Image 1 (cartoon, rainbow, N blue to C red):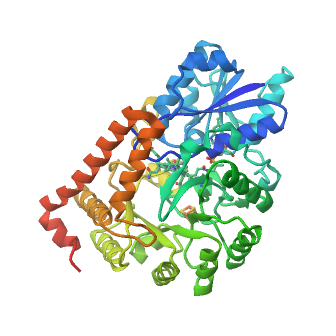
Image 2 (cartoon, rainbow, N blue to C red; image 1 turned 90 degrees about the vertical axis):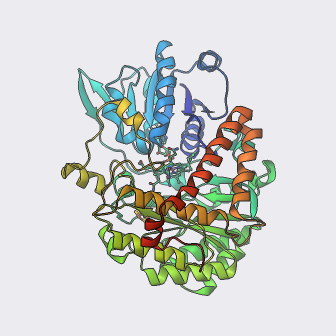
Image 3 (cartoon, rainbow, N blue to C red; image 1 turned 30 degrees about the horizontal axis):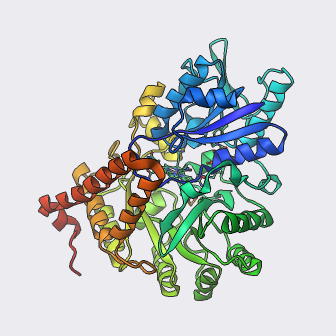
Length: 489
Ligand code: B12
Ligand code: SF4
């Protein structure tokens, strides 16, 4: 069977482009199992869909949906494929959760939910053998007007998957600049997380499991990318990189022993590495920055969302990380259900007390499939989207979709977020030559060369508008006073 796996484009997105690991993994697996699959990233490829279908003549296409923002282009791709009589399958983290609405359209035939490798192989085998897809695990489809969801297959033992075939994408397009190092590419070591934070997709999507890839395969890929694709470092997209101190030490020691001279970053949980030597070892193995989800400075909120963070550990882990030269990229979420003004004040105070660190503040958005989402639907606080157009209209994270807090007005949330952004622009973080703004500028200019002048103009416009909009915090002196949103110490 011939397959094209699409990564849809988001018009006007100012986000950096990451390699599409999910569909790259499925394509690598299909090719290793005797089928033919190519990966097509619509952020870059400019050929018309007709030309693409003429060139590859696929029997089936897959579209990944990992954000609502992908839906608009996914519809364009799918409609064009249906006109050619090609079977259309949607998948991905968001795609899995919107199966019914997708299948109620006339341009999606199947939704493959959760991991796609085995499901797609089974579909391809059945297609070649002229058999129906009815009993294939991990599929949703319509039969006689009824929605059918087949049972989920077993989680894949990731150590049995072949290496990602990086020749299926143009690696040079995805190289990023980050804290103190250049030309880094995203890659993954593990999938999932055993924790049960109420706002996260994990307990539902990965059933709170975590699995790792073969370290030999991973090191082989890293070596290949360094030697052949001008890759300077790696950005691990794992939900959480290590569950135990031992795992972290084994990982670092394997990288050191392999002789791959590289730098890397990833997601680090708190309270796992509590000794200074742990951070020294991470640094020795090439770790130069770590994304850390603090989420809230209010212990009450942390407990209410099932987040295991203890604020004393958060502080000491961050301090040790800074001391060895690993840049902490800290994330907070504001506007959790039930959050109060007092909680928000605690979060602002906590963030400010972590000196010299640029924090990322995001608005709380209920993720379909999460515990919170279920609770909010049951409480009648959110109405589930019904049609695919409703889903396409959701704009996660960029604005407040709904306010579920106890007593925090929208304008307070907006002002706090903007303050943190403005504060971050002028910070100089360890490992960087200049202030944060220069790094943002550098990544923006790169889009000129990678995605063309039109995108560059769009992205520059959005970046500048966003930077300027942070200045509106000065129009709200009362809110600044309420939360202490000042720049002097
Ligand atoms: C990298 C990443 C991004 C990149 C995406 C670029 C890219 N090219 O991949 C960027 C930075 C752009 C991004 C942005 C956002 N992201 Co993001 N992102 C991730 C991250 C960290 C890794 C994805 C990945 O590569 N995983 C590894 C691969 C191997 O797994 P996979 O992608 O899940 O693919 C497998 C299956 O899902 C399935 N599958 C996937 N696609 C398809 C397609 C078909 C046809 C089939 C059959 C199967 C299938 O099979 C694959 C192989 O097993 C995930 C978290 C995670 N660890 O997965 C979050 C994640 C997907 N992101 C998430 C979110 C919320 C966002 C944002 C909305 C956040 C924001 N602050 O704005 C934005 C959306 C952007 C926008 N403008 O709307 C959520 C989605 C939650 C949900 N279910 O709704 C996740 C799960 C993070 C989280 N913990 O909440 N993200
Ligand atoms: S938020 Fe992080 S720690 Fe919590 S379940 Fe999700 S991935 Fe795990």
